[in-house]
Length: 313
Image (tube, rainbow, N blue to C red; front, side, top):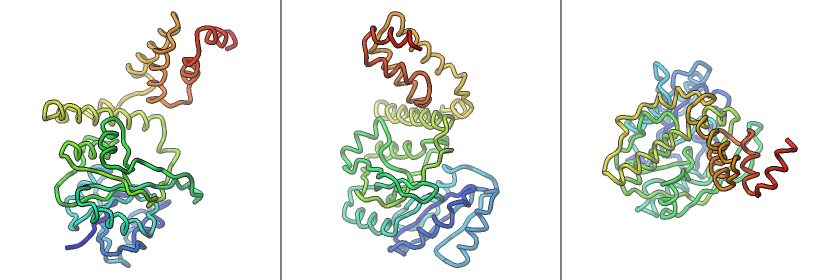
């Protein structure tokens, strides 16, 4: 049986695509099939991939007739993957040469672990390598952490192809977090290999306010569904309409106005504890670069300091 299926979805990724694909092909572990779905790119991505596929028969290239998004493309790849293990690879990250070798060694040595991520290092668009992303490695601690936040970097994962687990396709964002919570619901354990095995590219456009808010709201839904399943044995995913989040106007959303009102209500009379809670919630959803950062900082001081600052500004 083939040892590894590597899956990648590409949409208009020509800027970093050559470097990314080469980082997969140049792994020390070479016994794999490389399933790549071009998701109806409008740039030169497919042409680049086609040239790679002509030269390396490990690449099996598919082209979606229309853009269907990352979640559905990954599901198509998982369903045709033939190997014992499946590894994710992103079209802009760099897989370090030992990645597949080290993760397969880890999974072979830990048969109770279903999915293994790894640490990573940031890489700038200039090629400069930045700080280490050092997530929790212990499966028991990860199990606890995942109930309230994600701690496994999506482009680092490798998992066993022994059970059919797919991404839930309503999750346009945070599909990885929902995937991990599905695994938890099925008593599957996850860990991180304590080595930086990829260089993770961090784009400014990937952290726009719009995307960040939607990602967090989808993550909230994933956590909600997990809690429902733990309590009732099933969840309300079938009733979920992702358009409620996708079409959200962050600037004028009711939720945003409610949080703003809660913050202002803490100023007269001054309530530092509640001010801290509500302003922190606002910063979490809408970013730290706004006036409510000042309120959050002031919440750590008493009313006299607040009144003094108020006079100054």
